[in-house]
Length: 294
Image 1 (tube, rainbow, N blue to C red):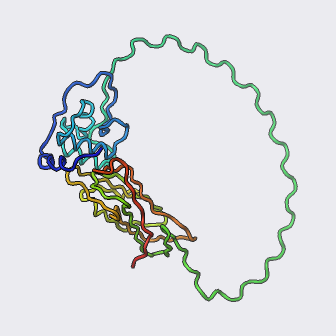
Image 2 (cartoon, helix red, strand yellow):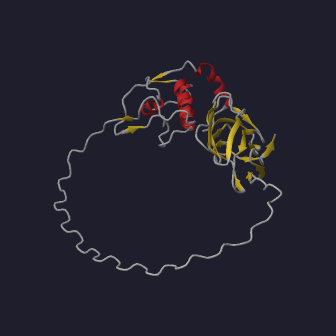
C-alpha cells in the first residue's frame, strides 16, 4: 500500500479523536473472524496496523468483518488504542488480544450422514515370533592390558592456551569481548510508513547487551525471547525518512564462554516494509562487519 504524504499529513491532527462504532450485520456465511487480521490473510502483521490507521483517518472504509477484526480491545469501536494493542502483539509484548476470535454461527447441515461402518475388523494378526535368540556370545576377552604407558610428559606447558574465539559476521573476538553489529539501508531514498522485523542471533554464544532503534521514533520492541529482538513501527502521517546508509538497528553483544573456535552470524529479517515511493516489500539493506569495541 503506497500512501500520498500530503494526504497523510492532513489527517494526523484529527486522528486521535476519531472513533467508529462497530455495528451492522455480519455477512452471511462468515464463520470465524480472527481478531487483528484486518486484511483477512490469516496473519496479524503491520499491514493490518496500516489499514486500521487509514480507517481511523477516514481514508478508507471497512466492511463489517474488518470492523470486528480491528476492534481488538472489544469496546465496539475502532480507535488508536486498537492500533497500539496490535503493535504490541506484533512485537510479542503480549501473546493474545483482550478479546477472543469471534465465531459467527452459520446454518448447520440439515442431514447427518446415515451410513456408518457396520463392522469393526474381526481379526488381529495371529502369528507372533515364537522364539527369542537362544545364545549369547560366549567368548569374552580373557586378559586386561598388563601395562600402562610408562612415559609421561616431564614438563608442564609454559604458556596458557589461547582462549577460543567466536567469529561474528566476519570479525573474530575472544570470550568477554564486546562487539557491535549495525544493519543499515542500501540504495534507498524513501519515507517509510511501517516496518516489521526481527534480529536473530545465537544466544549460546552471544549476550545481547544493548541496541538502538533511533530511526523508528514510536517503535514497539521485545527482547525477552532468547536469540531474538522483535521490533515494529508505523506512522502514516509523518513517516520515517530513510536514505542510503540509514541505520535500521544497531546492536552490541558480549562474547560468551566457548570451548572451541566457532563462527556465527547475526541476521536481520525484515518481514514487512511499506514506503511512500518504494511500495510494499521493496526494501534493501545490508549489514556492516562486526566491530570489537572497548
